[in-house]
Amino acid sequence: MGPGPTVRAATAADCAWIIALTPRLHAFGPPPWRPRDQMDRAVARVVETAILRPTPGATVLAAVDPEDRGLGFIHLHPATDFFTGEAHGHISDLVVAPAAEGRGVGRALMAAAEAWARERGYRLLTLNVFDANQRARALYERLGYRPDVIKLVKPLR
Image (cartoon, rainbow, N blue to C red; front, side, top):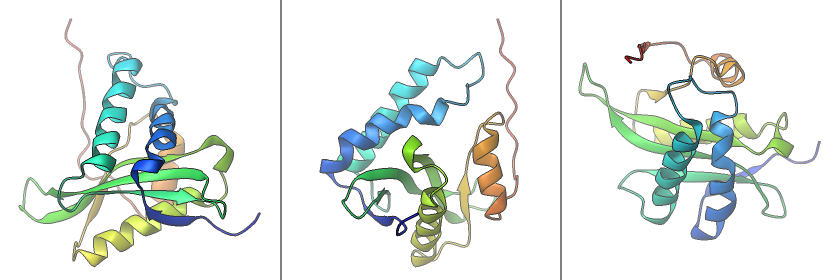
Protein backbone atom coordinates (compact mmCIF):
# COMPACT_ATOMS: atom_id res chain seq x y z
CA MET A 1 0.00 0.00 0.00
CA GLY A 2 1.43 3.38 -1.02
CA PRO A 3 0.97 6.76 0.60
CA GLY A 4 -2.44 7.66 1.98
CA PRO A 5 -4.86 9.78 0.01
CA THR A 6 -4.75 13.55 -0.15
CA VAL A 7 -8.05 15.16 0.81
CA ARG A 8 -8.79 18.54 -0.75
CA ALA A 9 -11.75 20.65 -1.78
CA ALA A 10 -13.50 19.26 -4.84
CA THR A 11 -13.47 21.45 -7.94
CA ALA A 12 -15.57 21.61 -11.08
CA ALA A 13 -12.88 19.48 -12.75
CA ASP A 14 -13.68 16.68 -10.25
CA CYS A 15 -17.41 16.77 -10.89
CA ALA A 16 -17.55 14.03 -13.55
CA TRP A 17 -15.70 11.35 -11.57
CA ILE A 18 -17.50 12.27 -8.36
CA ILE A 19 -20.95 12.07 -9.99
CA ALA A 20 -19.95 8.72 -11.55
CA LEU A 21 -19.35 7.37 -8.02
CA THR A 22 -22.69 8.45 -6.54
CA PRO A 23 -24.61 5.25 -7.48
CA ARG A 24 -22.31 3.38 -5.06
CA LEU A 25 -24.32 4.96 -2.24
CA HIS A 26 -27.15 2.58 -3.04
CA ALA A 27 -25.17 -0.51 -4.08
CA PHE A 28 -26.13 -2.28 -0.84
CA GLY A 29 -29.72 -2.53 -2.09
CA PRO A 30 -32.09 0.15 -0.83
CA PRO A 31 -35.51 -0.62 0.65
CA PRO A 32 -38.04 -1.83 -1.92
CA TRP A 33 -40.18 1.30 -1.57
CA ARG A 34 -37.30 3.50 -2.75
CA PRO A 35 -36.60 3.24 -6.49
CA ARG A 36 -32.83 3.07 -6.85
CA ASP A 37 -32.70 5.02 -10.12
CA GLN A 38 -34.63 7.85 -8.48
CA MET A 39 -32.25 7.81 -5.50
CA ASP A 40 -29.20 7.82 -7.79
CA ARG A 41 -30.51 10.80 -9.77
CA ALA A 42 -31.35 12.76 -6.61
CA VAL A 43 -27.92 12.27 -5.07
CA ALA A 44 -26.12 13.09 -8.33
CA ARG A 45 -28.13 16.33 -8.63
CA VAL A 46 -27.45 17.38 -5.02
CA VAL A 47 -23.73 16.57 -5.15
CA GLU A 48 -23.26 18.33 -8.49
CA THR A 49 -24.97 21.42 -7.09
CA ALA A 50 -22.84 21.24 -3.94
CA ILE A 51 -19.67 21.26 -6.06
CA LEU A 52 -20.66 23.87 -8.64
CA ARG A 53 -22.88 26.16 -6.52
CA PRO A 54 -22.22 25.39 -2.85
CA THR A 55 -24.40 26.88 -0.15
CA PRO A 56 -22.61 28.86 2.58
CA GLY A 57 -20.64 26.60 4.89
CA ALA A 58 -21.08 23.49 2.73
CA THR A 59 -18.32 21.67 0.90
CA VAL A 60 -17.45 18.55 -1.04
CA LEU A 61 -14.02 17.13 -0.30
CA ALA A 62 -12.23 14.84 -2.74
CA ALA A 63 -9.75 12.12 -1.81
CA VAL A 64 -7.13 11.72 -4.52
CA ASP A 65 -3.99 9.67 -5.07
CA PRO A 66 -0.54 11.19 -5.78
CA GLU A 67 -1.45 11.51 -9.48
CA ASP A 68 -4.66 13.39 -8.52
CA ARG A 69 -6.91 10.49 -9.54
CA GLY A 70 -10.21 10.35 -7.66
CA LEU A 71 -10.51 7.82 -4.84
CA GLY A 72 -13.66 9.05 -3.11
CA PHE A 73 -15.54 12.06 -1.80
CA ILE A 74 -17.50 13.38 1.15
CA HIS A 75 -20.27 16.00 1.06
CA LEU A 76 -20.58 18.14 4.20
CA HIS A 77 -22.94 20.88 5.25
CA PRO A 78 -24.18 22.71 8.33
CA ALA A 79 -27.34 21.46 10.01
CA THR A 80 -29.46 22.41 13.00
CA ASP A 81 -30.54 20.03 15.75
CA PHE A 82 -34.35 19.79 15.89
CA PHE A 83 -34.50 19.53 19.67
CA THR A 84 -31.88 22.06 20.76
CA GLY A 85 -31.45 24.36 17.78
CA GLU A 86 -27.69 23.75 18.02
CA ALA A 87 -25.74 24.15 14.78
CA HIS A 88 -23.66 21.12 13.88
CA GLY A 89 -21.95 19.51 10.92
CA HIS A 90 -23.66 16.87 8.80
CA ILE A 91 -22.17 14.29 6.45
CA SER A 92 -24.60 14.07 3.58
CA ASP A 93 -22.72 11.60 1.37
CA LEU A 94 -19.54 9.53 1.57
CA VAL A 95 -18.40 7.33 -1.31
CA VAL A 96 -15.17 5.44 -1.92
CA ALA A 97 -14.25 4.17 -5.40
CA PRO A 98 -14.31 0.36 -5.69
CA ALA A 99 -10.59 0.16 -6.47
CA ALA A 100 -9.79 2.27 -3.40
CA GLU A 101 -11.68 0.18 -0.85
CA GLY A 102 -9.61 -1.01 2.09
CA ARG A 103 -6.92 1.64 1.52
CA GLY A 104 -7.92 4.09 4.26
CA VAL A 105 -9.83 6.44 1.95
CA GLY A 106 -13.07 6.33 3.97
CA ARG A 107 -11.16 6.93 7.21
CA ALA A 108 -9.24 9.84 5.64
CA LEU A 109 -12.46 11.44 4.42
CA MET A 110 -14.11 10.98 7.82
CA ALA A 111 -11.08 12.52 9.56
CA ALA A 112 -11.28 15.48 7.17
CA ALA A 113 -14.99 15.81 7.97
CA GLU A 114 -14.23 15.92 11.69
CA ALA A 115 -11.55 18.57 11.10
CA TRP A 116 -14.05 20.59 9.00
CA ALA A 117 -16.61 20.42 11.82
CA ARG A 118 -14.09 21.35 14.54
CA GLU A 119 -12.84 24.33 12.48
CA ARG A 120 -16.40 25.64 12.53
CA GLY A 121 -16.77 25.14 16.26
CA TYR A 122 -19.34 22.35 15.97
CA ARG A 123 -19.74 20.03 18.93
CA LEU A 124 -21.47 17.34 16.86
CA LEU A 125 -21.07 15.71 13.47
CA THR A 126 -24.04 13.69 12.25
CA LEU A 127 -24.84 11.40 9.34
CA ASN A 128 -27.64 9.18 8.11
CA VAL A 129 -27.12 5.61 6.97
CA PHE A 130 -29.55 3.02 5.65
CA ASP A 131 -30.09 0.18 8.11
CA ALA A 132 -29.16 -2.42 5.48
CA ASN A 133 -25.84 -0.73 4.65
CA GLN A 134 -23.87 -2.88 7.07
CA ARG A 135 -20.42 -2.06 5.68
CA ALA A 136 -20.91 1.68 6.13
CA ARG A 137 -22.50 1.23 9.55
CA ALA A 138 -19.52 -0.85 10.69
CA LEU A 139 -17.08 1.89 9.60
CA TYR A 140 -19.05 4.59 11.38
CA GLU A 141 -19.29 2.55 14.56
CA ARG A 142 -15.52 1.86 14.49
CA LEU A 143 -15.01 5.62 14.24
CA GLY A 144 -17.16 6.29 17.32
CA TYR A 145 -20.53 7.16 15.80
CA ARG A 146 -23.55 5.91 17.74
CA PRO A 147 -27.26 5.69 16.92
CA ASP A 148 -29.37 8.70 17.84
CA VAL A 149 -32.83 8.91 16.30
CA ILE A 150 -33.93 5.88 14.31
CA LYS A 151 -36.35 6.60 11.47
CA LEU A 152 -38.91 3.88 10.73
CA VAL A 153 -40.94 3.69 7.54
CA LYS A 154 -44.19 1.89 6.73
CA PRO A 155 -45.11 1.90 3.05
CA LEU A 156 -48.83 2.53 2.61
CA ARG A 157 -50.40 1.05 -0.45
